[in-house]
Structure formats: C-alpha cells, structure tokens
Image 1 (cartoon, each protein chain N blue to C red):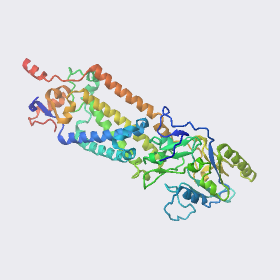
Image 2 (image 1 turned 90 degrees about the horizontal axis):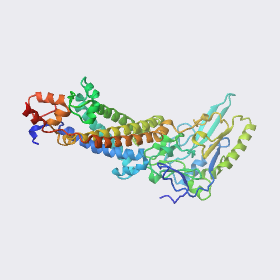
Image 3 (image 1 turned 180 degrees about the vertical axis):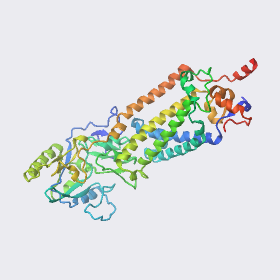
Image 4 (image 1 turned 60 degrees about the vertical axis):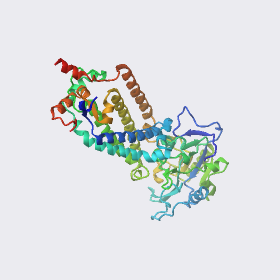
Length: 215
Length: 297
C-alpha cells in the first residue's frame, strides 16, 4: 500500500518511547514474577544472576515510570472520558466479536483503550510509590517496617494487575491486525482508521491534508 | 559454599511439591533458654558471638545508656537490651534482655524470602541464612515479627544469629551459652529446656514473682530461643518484646492467598485470549472497502 493512503497515528518520539518501555517492562516484569512465583525463579535470569536482577529491577521500573510520564503527557487529551464512549460500552459484545457494521463514534482511542490507559497510569503510580518504600539499600531504611510490609503487598498486587493488563493490551494489538505495524511504523491505513476509530478518522479527514493524523 | 546438609525441614521460596533434602530428620529439636532473671548484662555473650563468628562491628558511640552497640547489625548478631522499669511498689527494676534471632518454628523471614534456599530451617529447629543465595531484597526484615535480620551495607546480604549452627552440628553449644558466666544461657533439647524453665519459674514464684513464666510464643509456632521472664504477663517491659508475635497479615496475604489468585488470573487471561483468537479469528479490515464504496457512489 502506498504511503498516500496511510495516516500517521503515532509519531516517532512516542513510538520510540513505547518500544524502549516495552523492553524495560518485559525485563522488570519477568524478574518480578521470578520473586512472586519462586517456582519460576529461572525467569530472573533475563537480568543475569538473581542478585543482579534484584539490583536492576527497580531501575528498570523507574525507566518504565518515566516513559509513562511522557506518554501520559502526550496522550492524556485523547483519553479523557466522553459521552460517545457509552456507545462502545453498549456494543462491547460486537466489538469483541469483531463486528464493524455499526459506526460507534470512536475517537482516537476507544473506551476500552481509555480504561487501559488509566489503569496503566494508576498502577504504575502505585508501583512507583510502593517500590520506593521497599527499595534497598536506598530508601527502605527510611520507612518503618509495617509500612514496608504494606508496600510489599501493594507492589506485588499492582505488579500482577499491571502484567495482566499488559497481556490483554498485547493480545488485543495482536488480534486487531494493523495495530502492531501501526505502533512500529507509526502509520495505519485509511480503512483501518475508518473501521476502528471512525470519529477520529472523520476529524482528521476534515482537516486540510498535512499527511498527518495526530495533532 | 555450605556443607552438604540433608536435614532441612523448610526451605525458602520452595514449593511443597519439590521439598528440600530432609532424609536426616531423626533429630531432637534444640533450644536456647535465656533466664533474664539471672543475666547481669556483662555482654560476654556479645563478645563470644563476635569471637566465634569472626565478626568485628565498627566501634560505635556511647549514647548515654548501657546498650552497646545500640542495635543489632549485620555484624552484631546479639545485643543486650537494658530497660529501667519502676514497679507499682516504687521499686526500680533493671531488666536486661539478650536480643537476637528467636529461631521461630514458623519463621516469618523464611516465609517472606523470595530466593530459593536462601533461608532454611534444619530438623533441629535452627533457622539459618544461606547467604550465598541471598539477593539483598530485605523481605526477611519485613517478614520477621521480632525485627532481627539486618542487611549488610558492604555486601547487600542479610545476617542474623545462626544459633551457632556450625557448633551445634558437631555437638557443641552456641558460643554465647558456652561463655555466659552466670549460667543465664542454657542450651539443649527443647524438651529439656522447657523442663528447666519450669523449675526456674517455680523458683521465681517462690521469690514473689507471681507472674514469672516462660516466653515461647505460640503465634509463631513456638521458638527455639526462649526466655524465662519475671514478668511474663508483660513481655513488652523487656524492650518491647512482642506479647503475641505473629507473621503480619500483609505477609500472609502476599505469600498466601495472593499467589493462587494471581495464578488463576494468569491462566484465565491466557486461556481467554487463546479461545478468543481461535473462536473469533483475527480482526481484519477490508482494505478495499473504500474503493468499493466509491465505485457504488
């Protein structure tokens, strides 16, 4: 397909940030799982020895947080709740079955993606705060032990919840063909945009053609 | 490396389906009995501990109390805690407690530890850190109901009293018990120590300490370091010795129900995505739909 028929959906800095974050998250999540499910302790090997994994895990987590701060600033305006989101919820069954007959007035992100956005942003905040409380040798010494216990509990719970959300995110990107190439190249086809994000497609089509979708 | 040991009752971060080597289990449970009423606070046990274990903590500051060093550390595995307490009758009591690992039957440190085999409990009841497997996360610090483990700033590993597991393994008593000049520290089988404690408590009752008793808290399954206290009804007088120590419910939740819940959630998510993809099929857009519409129009 020629680039004229394609729409720029995600710019280079956002794409680069996304994929760097994917790598950091992958390493932090696997090492985290190695401690949560000790039977899977071999997963920590993605960061070398268990000792090295323990040292690197929090730094990778902070990298994910910083990447998400950037993506939050870039994407928050497309992820605010709108009246049109109700149509998506009302037709969630058709959405999951892949039926695109009805136009659902979907903006740049659909209601499910918005939930994912806010879920990720709140869970990473819990992970950052609880992670600081339990981070040795730098910060944990400053906190009382009962607070560290709470931190450990919340960090594990939020970590598991975030990994589950990201599994869902990755699956849906794999399921909706064109999404992953969209995040790799930045471009999606007009048909893709029209089918999955009809309102966003109308908005960018009505603007004078600049060859760009976002902004 | 540690010596081959085949008498491990519990091993940190290890599934019950893959238990540790535990064939040499024909062992008596041991215990150290510390009779607080006999202790004179001479700190010979602290010195013996440093001597036997080749530890030399940094020389600290005198902060105006007898406690020295002021707290347990990665290189001070036992410290005397001094408390001045005024009783109801106006008399001053100087309560001295030798603090250190209690070697719980249900150790919170071992429950919290995420590194397979970094904390073990031998068949004789001793809870021991296998420091070469320690990753320095400090979960044991949070797991312990007695605030005992300390992480070394030098090597990022957790340390605490070993109950001289190396000495006990060859039939000797711990260095602190060996050196105590007043006989306040006894060591032997747990049953013998409970018997001895009973005699001591009786004697204290006779001397007017009506609330004397044995401290062997059942909330952690009993301990392998026990105290004879003259005020067993108020253990908190002895530098906040917990009245009913238990593993915190946050640790229980995190290491207990959260794991199966998370495992089910993972399987459900993965199964859901698998069946969704196989059932619904890939979500593809007809790239020529546009041309088609335009032709119609």
